Length: 183
Length: 121
Image 1 (spheres, rainbow over the protein chains, first blue to last red):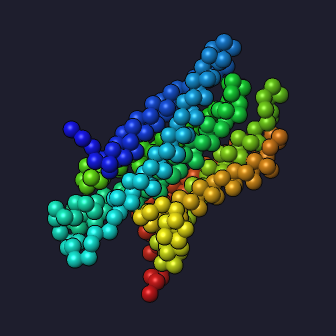
Image 2: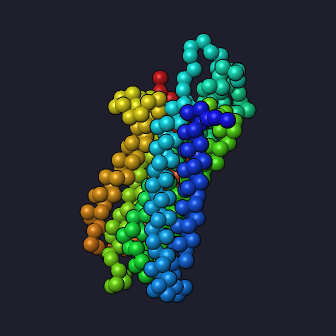
Image 3: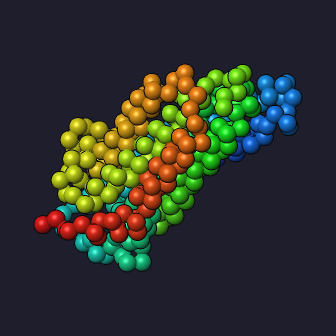
């Protein structure tokens, strides 16, 4: 039982960081949603503010790490160019080392690249921008966020949009890896 | 109206709008990359500037969108710090920027826009 270097990075990018992102999103969203003055005592706010802070900061950091590893480590393996002479119209064994070209070699799989990867590789970069804005709002206000309903609601919307951007990227990443894994 | 017991909202509004600007810039470069082979070549920051290896035009798109995000955040922060701004308005702008950015990265939409331009020789 062993991983190749490529498989290991794919697991770190998609599974490890993806799981952390999901956990941080769940914790952060629950924290933001329940941070209402009418629901909490002062002690309650003080007790959950550090958790909210950790959740939102972890989500932002993980989002940056995920897009960085995806773009600069895994993606070059995905789009590697096959040597000259290799038939790019047949999904041959030799073409499996070149996932992008393997997918494009058949009409049945080409959309995984044309729609899935083309969207995933770009929309994913919005997740860290949005998550960082939310983390900044939480760090800036801290416990005072309970008295800033409009910012708390905006943070929930941005947090959810960050999750959607990452979700699109993660879902297509999983499907593409199933269709043509980076190995 | 500011809750007098909290900090002014300007810096947070600036962070939200900057995220929208980063998203929009990513979307714009996705379209420009498809429209112009010259821009596409320029966006290969891995070859042109050594930013990564084998990443292609995505290296430039990611760098420029992130740079736009960070620079706009600094500029907007300097403008809005210490101020209580109309947060609803700033957030509406941020949301519009994010949604347009999202839309421009969606292949059926950017391909539709690309088809409106004459093909390069």
